Structures are given as C-alpha cells and as structure tokens.
Image 1 (tube, helix red, strand yellow):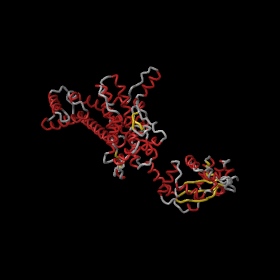
Image 2 (cartoon, rainbow, N blue to C red):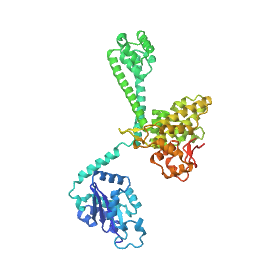
Image 3 (cartoon, rainbow, N blue to C red):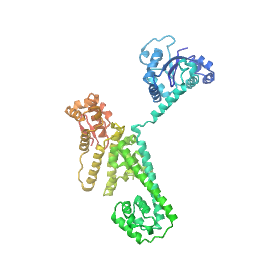
Image 4 (spheres, rainbow, N blue to C red):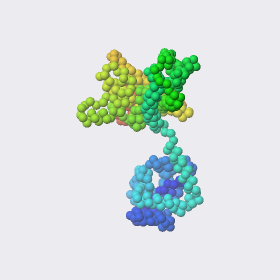
Length: 545
C-alpha cells in the first residue's frame, strides 16, 4: 500500500476520524463498497475508528456545523486533525519541505463528503479525496456509526441530532440586518396589489351607490372619504342633518365647503330609491373597502419605518415607495448599490431599451421607474428631463451605496439606527439642479456639499460608535493636523485609531469611493460617478471632474 487514507466524519456528538483499509482496491469498486455497507461485519473490515473528538457543548457543535456548511474549517476541527493525523498527511506547508518522508505515512490522504470543506482543507495543506467511493464510505459510517465508534454506543444520537438540527435551523432563519430589504420588497408588492384592488372596488362601489346618490361621486373624490360618507349618509331620504352632520364633516376631512355641498345635494339629488336589502349589501361592501384602505395606510407606515432602518438616504432622495420599488427591481439593496447610475436610470424600462437597440433607432429611454419621481415631473422644459433623470440616477446610486455599505449603529432595543444626513444633502442638490435648469442659478459644488454632510454627521451625538467611547470630532481634528503624505500613509496602513480610520472610511465611501481601495498602492483610482469627489495622490479630497 502506497500510503494511508483517513476519513473525516462529522456527527452531532463530535468529530470522528477513521482509517480506511485497502483504499486502492476500494476506490476502484464503488459497487463493492455499497454491498459492504449492507453488512456491519464486512464494513468493519474496510474501515476502523482512529480517534473521536466530543463537542464540549451545543454551541461548539453548532459553530462546527456552521463552519462546515460555509466551507470553513472550524478551529476545533483543525486542532483535532493536527493532533491525530500523521505529519505527512499535509501535502503542503512544512511537510512538503521535507525531502525524505518514509514509512507507511509517506502518502496520507483525508477523505471528506463535502467539496467546499475539502477545498478549505486542501488550502491548509491536506491531501483531500472527494469521490463517489468516499461518499459511499460516509454513507456506510452513518449506517453503522455505533458499531464503529465505542464512545457513541451509549449516547442518545437521535436527541443530539434533533437538538443540533433545531439550533442550525434557528441560526439560518434568524434576522440578518443586511437582509431586511426582503420585507421591503414584499411590502411594496403588496401595496401595488392593494392599490389595484382598492381602485377596482372603488369603481364598483361608486357605480353601485351612484344609482342612489350620483352627485356624491363628483363632490367626494377620495376613496376612503367616499366610503365613510356612504356609511354615514346611508339612504339619503332618511339622513338626519342634526344627528349626523358633524360625522359627515369629519368624514370629508373637516372641509365645511364639501360638507355643505353634500348636504345640499342630498336635498336635490336625482338618484333613485333603493331597498333595505340593497343598501345592506352596499354597506358591507363599503366597510370591506374601508378596511382595505386602512390596511394600505398601515402598510405604507410600515414601509416607511422599514426604509428608515434599511435605506434612509435613498428614502430621503426619492421617497419610501419609489425607493422600495428600485430595491425590489434590483433584487436587493446591495445589488442596487452595485449598479452604475446609467443602469439605475433605466430600471423598469428594459423592454423599451431592448426594443430601441433591436431597431437601432438610437432613441433609448431616458428614464424608467425614476419617471415617477417628483423631480422629473417638476422639470419645466421637456428637453431637460433627460438631464435631470441622469442627475437623479447618480444621486440614487450614491444614496444606495451609503445605505448598503456604511457601518450601522445598534440601539439597545436591537433596532438599527441609521442617519439620513447625506440623503437630505443629496435631495438639496436635486433642488438646486432644478433651479439651475429653470433659472440658471449655479448650484454648489458636490465636494462642498459632501464635506458639509460629513461634518454634520460627525458632530451628531448619536454616532454609530459613540457607545464604544470614540470621539469623532477629536479624531477628525487629529486627521486634519497631519500632512497630506502622512494622511495617505495613515489611512493606507490603518495605523490610526479605530475611530479615525472609521471616520475617514465613512467620508470616503459616502463620496462614492470604496473605502477598501484606500489601502491600495494607487489611491487615485477610485471614482464613484459623475462629479464624484475622490482622494487624490496628495491625500486631499478633490473633484473627479
């Protein structure tokens, strides 16, 4: 036999290392392994137990399982293999440097049943085997686990497996702050569905009740107010102004003019009479429609709160509904943040884009979902809408990057506290661009606005790292006292305090740059978008255009 082959088996109670006998013969005949798995005595002739590592507690078992599932070698597994595997089992590292490795351990290998784990072990220097025959051996070990490992014969394996399975499932399903954009996507989809349902039901109710009181349709246009008015007026012949006049006024939004017009129309209505049975059905339908309106309003508030947690800056730029639609169309906030501004500009207009490209007409769409933004509708001249759309898309891209990649501050309650200062400043820039397109008033430079936003955020009392005792104002002063060359070196080497480095990274990334690239050899190669400030070779913030 040219060398030894070992098998690593992960179980709920612990890690088991087994020795495979005559692997050269076993590896060539998978069917023989399958037949041996059916008989415990025959299978014990193929494989024997070498070592067992029991987990100290459920937490260690869960940590090991999570690591194996992620393709990472847990520390406990690494120590276990270093202790019980022969030194020559490592094909790399120190053992590879040895010129002479003799004996039965000259060519040792380790069999695994997971390809990702095998790749991680091979990076540590182990010679790994992952093959159909090895998978069959793992299946046999699972079948005859008690017979192979004496420490497991008295343990309740079923309870271990059930407990670990529950813990693993809870760990996978726990709330991930970076995945809270999923409820946003579901909420905006439900809002769109409710809007269609409410619109359809509203038309049916107005058509139905319009036979009795047709004048009410033109007087009360809001759906929710119309439903409340129907439930208060009921049959207009029996309406008591003294008893229900105040309720009607509240139903129409405390508008005395509208209420007076409704009361006048009740007295001179041309509608026909309806029976009690007819109105009973109308009343139930109006109540159902009113509940849908209230549910839609509650869902809107929920979406607004979620956007404050997940993407407050994007919400400040385009609002919660349009921001949620952009996230939903991209698939995730991180995906939206990775999109360039040109892609965000035409999100939702893919069909028109491909149609223009196919026809080679050159008239590609100027906007998609962004058309519903108020900034596009407020542009006075049609020829400037494309320019405004491009500018709006670039600000949405910056806001999404800030929301997706900036560090988060945790409240004691566990909710995520996010700042929207940069979003407010980006919205101010959009307002200034509107004035520039309309009146020619030159807006402020992007660099000045971003510096102002960074200064405001650093001066807030509830900064993300304030609970750790970091003084960002002092760190900012420390940063400004350095020379340009020293500033670049400090950021690149990460030699400053955590607070200062965090503050610099926050400012850089909020300007559209990638903070990780600061430590690169050339700090000038990071540009976020049109007119985006960058860190130049002298360590100062400049404008890319």
